[in-house]
Length: 272
Image 1: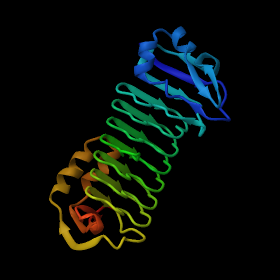
Image 2: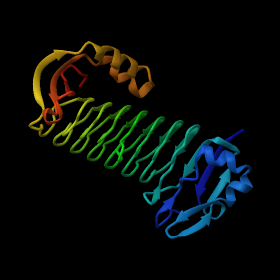
Image 3: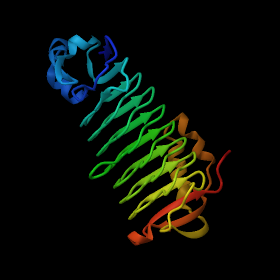
Image 4: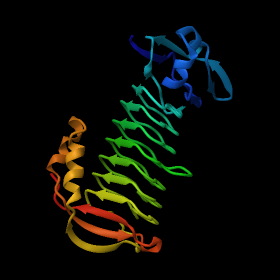
């Protein structure tokens, strides 16, 4: 079997909902003729997949989507298995309500990445927009990796899982966190951890503005970080940098307005 490839005949100029292009739904649809007959919403219309895409391959468990732009949305919605690869911009709501499987993006994505995600793995090679791993309930588990920059409110209300941002993050990172881990390896904007109840935010450098509810605990050696970084370094070639990270941090506890059970760790011994 070969990877099933969907290539847009032309880039959309209005919202294109691709929530039907998941391994779960395509496996139930049947052969390529049945898949081509499925309809997607383009703006206010419903149009058959065969009118918008060329189709190649027959493995519905391994999907590739090409020639997308910022108008696409909801790729990977609710998927529970398989793999989706996006060879361009992945749009908004990538991996919304995802419950399993993996999504790999060779480009950027929009806002609300991993919205109310339950499980699975998402990797974005470029930048992501605002509200990563957020939602009314928040990200519940899984791993989101953004190798570029991220917008505001990454990890807001998250409950479990991990978000790794390799470059800069915006304001209110980890705001209202209930649990989970957010790692920022670049600069971070204002007020990370604002209103957090529990959870851990790990940062390469101190934020531009620290909230009044975050209380300094001084320089500490957090022994568990040795194991944490060791495990991260084994996840692939791009993660190997973590084997050089040390456990020394400046720890802040907070948000004290929410009983102060969360922590913000500013790394002190990292490779330049």
